Length: 136
Image (tube, rainbow, N blue to C red; front, side, top):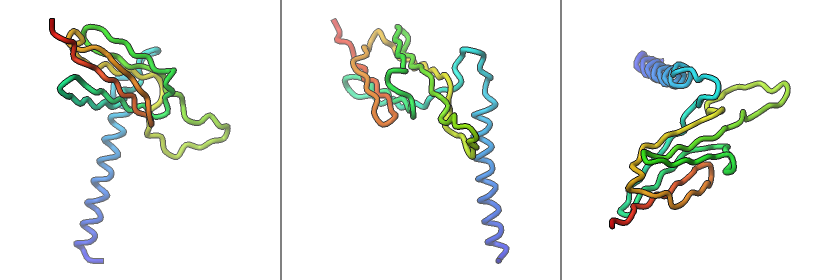
């Protein structure tokens, strides 16, 4: 093996290790949740159009009936509980990257200008449709 190939291989492994370390740090070294507080925040995409906003929240494995949506003048809060994926006796976990437990995501939006018009859950993605209020 040429030294250039070995150097390339070592660099790739070093980058992969840094990536894994960063993911672990984000997962385990954020503030520790207290009993009843949210354990994680789902990722969110917000897209603005002329008539309003589409907010998409990634919620893999969360049933629609478990999701609570609350709106107040300063924004929208989405919360629920994502159960542990496997409770089989004797099961061995090889990798656990998708978070579980109670979650809450607060999305800061001026609700004086917007109103929540629709919500759908499809393929693990909650989509909230917010429309601009008509000016008087």
